[in-house]
Image (cartoon, rainbow, N blue to C red):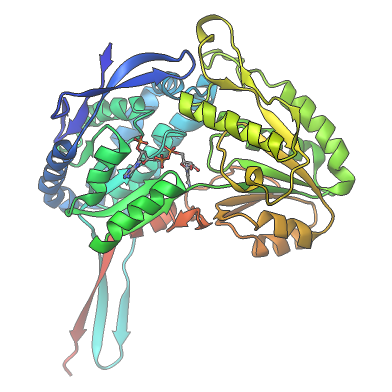
Length: 482
Ligand code: NDP
């Protein structure tokens, strides 16, 4: 059975304890590889390696770093099919989604930040007659990057690439549930001649390996994507050490659908924004609010399209809905469907664990589920489920739908469907979220700021924001003598 290794100081190494954790294939429910159960010693080794690498890496000019990071990008692209298959087996997502979205995005993340670092500029301020100030922007040193299981390589590289491009050295931990593509990335980094110690990947449990990265005094910043509760734990641990923090956390995103929208485009996109990756994208819209004149038509057509989605083997090309990531997650999703029933919700389609015959008969699949009849402030409509479950609710006025949309503790993204431009502007301005899509969903430009408000996190990723996060400004004031 494959034994995944840590990547420390340019080498693939066993964990210090030689202890391993089981890694499951969610589509079959079977253990298919083992991952290092890393501890403080592994993190210590990784931080030491990163500290030694930092002076050389940070002193390279942006073009030299660019060339190395572009080599990593090219190797990911070369192995696109292999990486997509690995992601599908590890996570349960359909291979076609991994091939179209996850892996190409990992290629772009490296490309984008390799080139962005060559276009940064620093500031200068003249205090007329007295002084000139110039501002240096220096890499922080060793930084920690911790990522979740839903878009494994996509989100892992979304953090690592800007950190490396900014001149930091990195200790990173992928989710223990989906470690494989991070392991394959470490092999590609060796092939790309990334200098030893610049990137170190420590596998293992959040509470052990992840927490050791956050607690380490020489790790200057933590870039974290994951659940809100974990984010709060990390913030508590990091705050007394005054570490810089970027926290991308949970969501409970609203879709606001007005009767004047482009109906076909809205319907097609709403199926995707609800059930892509089994609803396990932090940007999926899980609360769908529909203006009353359109409600019955939408309900009928939406349920028909959702019921036609093909649940099946993630490796089969015709599959739309793969497995959810783990057995505990399956149970969590089913418990929320149960709760929705108790709260008075009516299940319009789905609602059960799905059975897939053949090699996936023991896999963890959930039927795409649509629920109506729930109050906007019930638990089903307030808490993050992070699975293929959406609620639909009618509304009559803009004020009412804004109240519903903004009623949750989260504020990551929102989608507005209307042909009325004034209304789109009005609502975009009033909605409490870091990202608003109008007449589209998941249309991403990597230059734009990405992040949430309220309990969806602090800080912004993307564009120059991420390069700023991994650097510190230092002002130098020079007195002018006349
Ligand atoms: P978790 O918060 O459980 O885990 C995220 C990562 O943090 C994992 O690598 C985990 O390790 C690690 N971790 C857990 N505890 C600690 C700790 N105490 N110290 C340091 N690291 C720790 O999230 P999930 O993996 O379950 O991901 C799903 C969540 O991520 C959802 O809430 C989703 O909304 C959110 N998310 C947010 C996004 C955004 O951009 N805002 C994007 C994607 C997802 P381990 O593997 O052991 O759990």
